[in-house]
Structure formats: structure tokens, C-alpha cells
Amino acid sequence: MSEIAEKVKAIIIDKLGVEESEVTPEASFTNDLGADSLDTVELIMEFEKEFNVSIPDDQAENIATVGQAISYLEEHAK
Amino acid sequence: MELKRVVVTGLGALTPLGNNVADYWNGLANGVSGAAPITRFDASKFKTQFACEVKGYDPENYFDRKEARKMDLFSQFAMVVADEAVQDANLVEGNFDPDRVGVIWGSGIGGLRTFQEECVNFANGDGTPRFNPFFIPKMIADISAGHISIKYGFRGPNFVTVSACASATNAIIDTFNYIRLGMADVVVTGGSEAAVTEAGIGGFNALKALSERNDSPETASRPFDKDRDGFVLGEGAGALILEEYEHAKARGAKIYAEVIGGGMSADAYHITAPHPEGMGALNVMKNVLRDANIKPEEVDYINVHGTSTPLGDISEVKAIQTVFGDHAYKLNISSTKSMTGHLLGAAGAIEAIAAIMAIKNSLVPPTINHFTDDESFDAGLNFTFNKAQEREVKVALSNTFGFGGHNTSVLFRQFID
Image 1 (cartoon, each protein chain N blue to C red):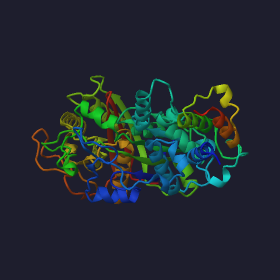
Image 2 (image 1 turned 135 degrees about the vertical axis):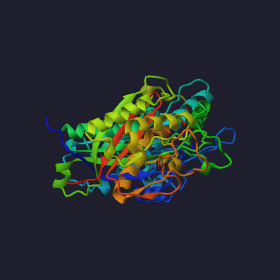
Image 3 (image 1 turned 90 degrees about the vertical axis):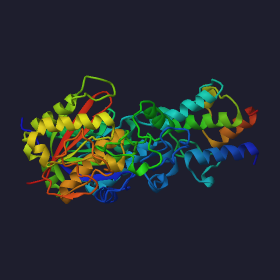
Image 4 (image 1 turned 90 degrees about the horizontal axis):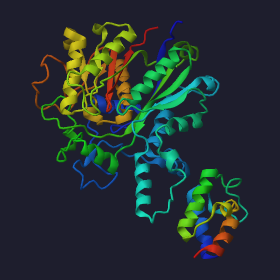
């Protein structure tokens, strides 16, 4: 697993208070990991901070699963 | 319409003296001070370096980590005491109508730590706004009542009163009114505060409101003592379950005491200084006696606002003497803030609990830290100095006054069917 993927998973585990085993690539933040809309906003902000990127709102809407977050950040992280 | 009777059927407390009602009362009865050097931040550059903090509090004993992270300490405190009170009152599914159970909470400030941290983060950044989505819902003072209602599904009246140090008493009075008017069967009321932060201590220091007795924190809160030099900031929460009497009786609830009156007034004088003749304090005590329709002679104990500030203590005592006349000499008067410090918006809640427990236990908790008499006070008054006094308390009055000149009083009576 890439360094980015590791970091993404760590952030999700910390912010959503979930077990590592639950954080699979297909896992949806809202449907599987118990996040509400505010949690999702907070996750995006944490990704922006950790990876020094700015994720526009229209793109943030497409980041709904662990896998989508990892691939977005692998593509855009500086 | 005939007003309904309102009784107290549950209590919860998280205080500098103890983290539940039993431990809190034990501290009060034994004259323990809750003051100690500040642990919540490095206070070494502050004029005041001590406070009455809640001790041994670990949020993980009460919440999962994710839940705790979304609540400022003042909301966490609210949840902890509400839970103790709800359990104490034995409110379980099926013995109440959730649409008729409200939450009316009090908080003077709200999430001060959250507010401070978010503003500091922004100020330290490059101007890009990166506010946490939980910033506002953590910080706003009303969120505590929201959290309590969500946890238990209480769908009745729900809001928070904000009147500085009178907040929790305003919440109790509003509760009393809603229930006696028939607008709710049960209400979780009380208050919580968690302002021991850089902004809290620094702000009150700037007002010259806090004691600066850093060499002896435990003796710093000394209401009515000649050498008192300001209040000691406290934190924590208190919860009371108030319930319509017939509702309580029908479900076989235990009853601590009856709420018989609420009084309110304003000084209309100065934003922080009390009226020198205690005009607002005088009016509020007259109002509460009138509301309860009792004579001053029926009151046994006054849990005073008595914060240990030079001016406030004098004006309150002047007002007591005017309202109670000769009966003032027969009263037990005490300031439990000598032990707990000043919990601001939660003060009225924990002091109402002190008054109720005094009725229940026939024991008046003391005003500790009395060393030197102040000739400003009539030597014939009984301030219950230094040691608790046994006394049958049939009626107890609790006063709380807030910056802005808000004055509130509430009366509790021994419950007689």
C-alpha cells in the first residue's frame, strides 16, 4: 500500500473512530463508516491539510469511499 | 387556570468537589475546597494561576472517542450530569411521553475552548479559512440541550438560557413555569460551564474579578471575609429533573423537594458592578417570596450568590437584611462558592442541588475560609462559617446574579404530600 493510502486510512480511523479492518477501499464514509455530512466535510479538510491540496467542492462530492479518496489524493497530492 | 405543583425527582452533579451528587454533597458537608493550580493550560504568565477544576475526568469513561471529539467540554459535562439525573429519576422508556419531556439548560458562555482554538488556528494560518465543520455546533451555548434531547429522544421544549452567572437559575425558573403551566410533564434542567481556558482566566483577570491569591488557592474563595479579593473560577455542571407532581406520583418517583417559587429582576445599573444598595437583589428576593406566596419568616436557609468579591457580597447582604428584617438573624446563610468556586452559568444548578440536599439531609453546608470578620457585615448574621450546621431546613432559597445585572432566585420546600 502506498504511503498516501496509509495516511488516508489513519485519518479515517482517527476521525470516524472506526476499526482498521472496516476501512476497505469500497467502504463508503456515510453508508459503511457511520459518517454524517459534517464528518465528511471534516475528512476532506483533513485530507487538504495533510496533503497540502485544495479540493474544490464539486470534486469533494465525488469522494465518497476510501478508495476514491486514495486515488484522488494519489493523483493530486504535492 | 390552576397551576400545577412541580417537584424535583432526580439530580446529577460534576463539580470541583466530586463527580457525582453523593461525592459533591460529601465535599460540601465536610467543607472541602475544590481549588488548585490550573492544569488545563500553562497559566504561569496569568495573574491568577488557580481555579476550581473538575478532577479525574476522563471523557472516555463516558463517550466513545468520536462522540467526545464533537463536543466541547461544557457539552460533555452537560451529558454526564443529565445521565446521572435521568437514571436517578428512573426515567425509563414507557414511564413518560417523550413529546412531554423537555430540556432547558443554562450556560453563561458555551464552548469557549473551542472558540479560542479555532480562532487561534485561523490567526496562525495564511488567511485560508480552514474552520472545522464542528466549530459552530461545538461552540454555541444551546448545543448542550440539543445533545441531551438527541441522546434520550426527549422531544418537548428545548433551549438554553444565557444570563451569565444566573443562567442555570433562569433555566430552572423557566422549567418551573413551563411545568406548572402544563406545557411539559418532565424537564431536564440545570447548567454547565467549562471556561477554565486562557481566554476565560485572562478575560476575568482583565475585569479584576478573580482572586489572585496564588500562594494559597484553597483559601482564596472566602466570601464575607475581610480579606476577600475576588472569585475563583470553577467548572462543571449540575442537572435537576423537575416533574409535574401528579406525573411523578403516578410513576412512583422519589421526590427530593418541591419547587415553590421563581423570581427575576434586573439591576438596570452597570454591566458588571452590582447595585450598591443591592436593589436588584432586594427585588428578586421579594419577587420570589411573592411568587411562592410565603412569608420571609418561613425561609430557613439562603444559599447566597456570595462570590467573594468585595462589592457583591456587601450588596447581597444589605438586600437580605432589608427583605428579611429581624428574621435575617434566624437564617442560615452560606456561600458554597467558598468550596466549589464560581461555576458561572452552572452555578445556579449546583447551588440548587446544595439547597435541596440541605433540605434532604437537615444540614446546612458551610461558608469556608473565614479568617477575619469584616465590619461591613452585621455580626448577628449566621454565615455558617467554616463548619456545616445541623438544622431542619423546610424552605431554602438560592440566589444567583449575573453580569449584565440579571438577578434570579428560586425557592425549594421540603416535600409534604
